[in-house]
Image: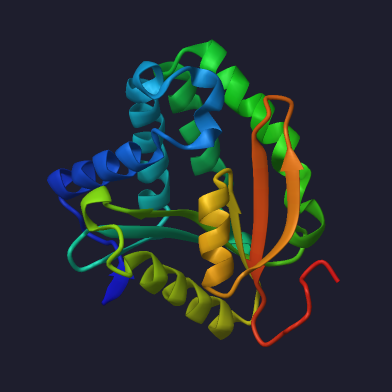
Length: 204
């Protein structure tokens, strides 16, 4: 069963930080930070702070084994100040040149889902499965949970990824690719959506 992650001990939270961090070291989001070995430590710091934000905002969900995680945020209730605090914490913890590159990239690809994201929607902030447990159907169950929540709310569920393999996975799990945008650094952002009860493309 997948449920909201609440009342976690610092040890449990730290395990999630490490699991998510290790999963994102290879992500194209950090393309400009050097090789995986060169960027490893800063990616771990970045994702630890991101996990903290998602958890403190009450938007983190996990399976009972704590091997799969998804962050889900209703755009109508997205916490602004906690996100700003997260960015400031990142700026204090990670070299400015690297954060500048990330923020520039985020600004570039921010318009990838601009048209669709203006409506109320459910954002999949992250989907992560422990590397030792990939291939066990955990990602499918995490996405199913997100789709059920979107169905209950009657709003679209959006996924944004910089990894083509992940985009292909989301399409396999019932989402539609409605936009791509390639930034100056050569990284492509794939925007996908699951639109409850509708068969047409969300960009229509």
